[in-house]
Image 1: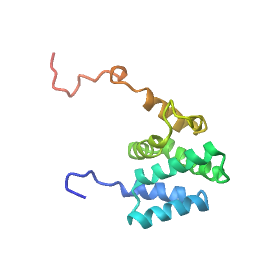
Image 2: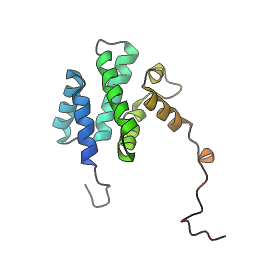
Image 3: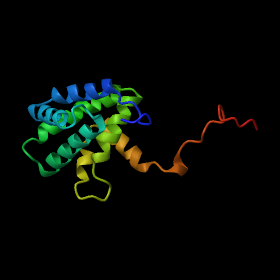
Image 4: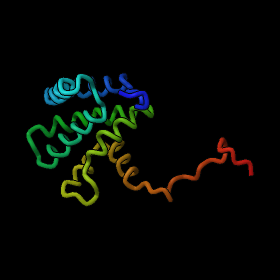
Length: 143
């Protein structure tokens, strides 16, 4: 890591990994293989892997779909109770792995727990022209 890279929030990464590992043997295997490959928990990379697992198993109705749903449900609880760092990690890792509006397997988004589904839809609907106006306080604008 260079001096310009942002610090990795290891507490959030560990909490994500521990939460996932507790949901099923499959989730624990995904976490263990991730750590073996990277020698640490790269939370957004791990959550992308979980997102792909959820996406494919739920879309295909695979045997392990219930495990994937349980893992994502646990992440939704972390998201709902978490601070900005946790919410950002889950949004940029897991939710970015979900299919876009015109993709064939988009129906899996409807299966996301409400906090994650609502966040993803807000992310997809964001446009610079719909952002709330910036507060003049602290901008140096003294009009």
